[in-house]
Length: 439
Ligand code: XUL
Ligand code: CO
Image (cartoon, protein in one colour):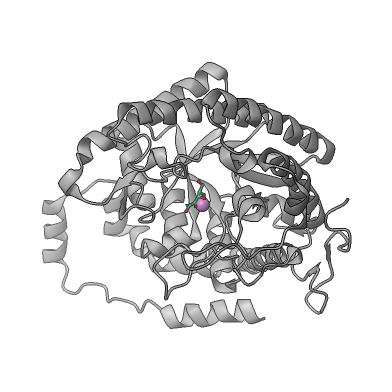
């Protein structure tokens, strides 16, 4: 333990603690709904924001102070040191999973061959640290958007060589994900989208996108990579029209191209916000289509139209997201990955811990509250009651497909008065939710 010497491993001290380096709500081994909190939550650290984020924004340069970067001689050295820092940080926080893009863990070199060689060198170190600590890879991915070759997209580029390069890069990223025992692999359509239809053949680009994903499925079979594939929806940014707009769009794309059995969704809170949806809407839509896979847990700002990737501290959102996850039966291959970066003025090393603690506590509190709502069946009983007219009589005939328009017309004509509507009780339910949150 070298890099965060002054900080003891973070422990649960309860909600009255004033120690910023303690959990107030996250008690990893406490049993909630029959299993330890850590198994419900499956927290993951995002390598890109936490290890390579610099605080740069369009108006200003890097702000973060990272003593480990200062001592490294070159970019490859830096990448090696960062592996040690990453694992020490996860150990201090008790985070048992991580996620990365290929280019987060190792810098790109002049040729693909050399890039892959350096990547393997870093993967060796990561593998050693994983063995030492027991920390696991939640998912891997390829960065198909950062390098300028992807200016017009990757698998949706109009340039066949770029499509080929993206395929070669993804092949390698899948191989290292398999080697590290990753339980999943994410496709976030970095620049898969377009700016203007004046220069875009949308149908051709979507067909190519699907071709690319089919190639990935085929290659996974070939190398026996059994992890779960995910698509991560996002409506805009960097392109104006991202093809993977939201859960509904992605589900219909996957079905159209016969990919729905091979993919689930990795749903990100800030992306839901950008799509004009709530996170719980996106989660529910995925869940009812049997495609809820994993979560990028962060939050955006409702007043801003871009992806701010803030650490999740919104307790209301945390409760509703955890409720959906519980309702869907919990994670299998997925988890809660903090795709979140410290704010630019949070430039100290210790801010990395404080931010993760804040996010973990938000979701832990969310789990505690959502579990009580679930156990007390507050919302589920209300649903049963609200839809009870479909349990017998004409309602039962409708849901068992026994009747059509003609029979329903007969039914209405024969009936003097329709059963009256009942109030939706939204305010009451919101007030009850508040009671569960505040206690
Ligand atoms: C970008 C984003 C990505 C994906 C992985 O908005 O969320 O970091 O999570 O490529
Ligand atoms: Co993400």
